[in-house]
Length: 365
Image (tube, rainbow, N blue to C red):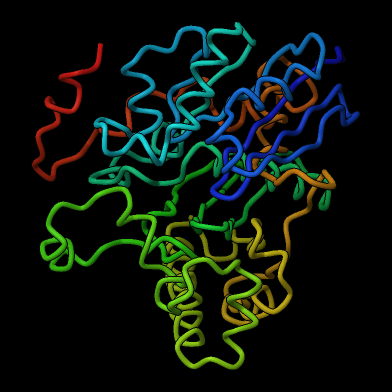
């Protein structure tokens, strides 16, 4: 089997992670604070260029697109990938958009991969009035989980079955993987996170009136606790002696529990859920992991997803596996079974809640 030099990138809320492979040899394993990417996006290009002759990179993809080369991205593509349509949103997403523009300018061979909503393995009726069913990086994390189960149980990708819970610095997401295919997802804007508020009550959205990106990034555990700047591990420590923080953490864990129990109901058979695999920064913390294991143990065995790196997160690892598979490398069976090449549509498809969709693109070429 041919060897390929591939790279995966995960644009996280706290850090951007980079994972490079030459066949099964790690050639890059690095992390940059997201604040640094925001201030100096050129650092991403400098780091990527430490790998000579990259065959393919899965670029930071935001909400994703049907597979598309970075060099072919249009302004409309960027808007859909970033879900950014006005000046007010730019401050939160400038880093990602600028990096994609630099990647295009530098002609680095890269592709944008789909988000969960683009996948043909998710029935259309599950996509109605949904945008965030799991961003592209969540799809990449799921690929790492598929590889994990394949190796752990000596099975093919088509026999992997699990629920993925990714607990990030800002957002938490839950995905359902049946027969090695993503069949549903609850994205980070729909579950309470350590920063994100999760799905807004309709009447609350009415009271907030003009909901902005900043509203989505607030209202979660740290806001409830009253300590916006604390890290996840600091919040967990504080919860053991501060009543308000304890309430915030309990609300979070129950939000995750409801999401997992809900998504478990759509599997063909309950027994098809072999495991619940935990990923993300929060999953590495023993106290939080044990609390979630205790809440979810009636669904299936719960464990920490395997990591194949010392530093970069599982999303960056999965992105590299996808790049390898797209080139026909050793992970091609995973990519083929996921049906990534059949992804289609946009994240704005099948939205029946009235809004002025045509005005979103009035200033976009």
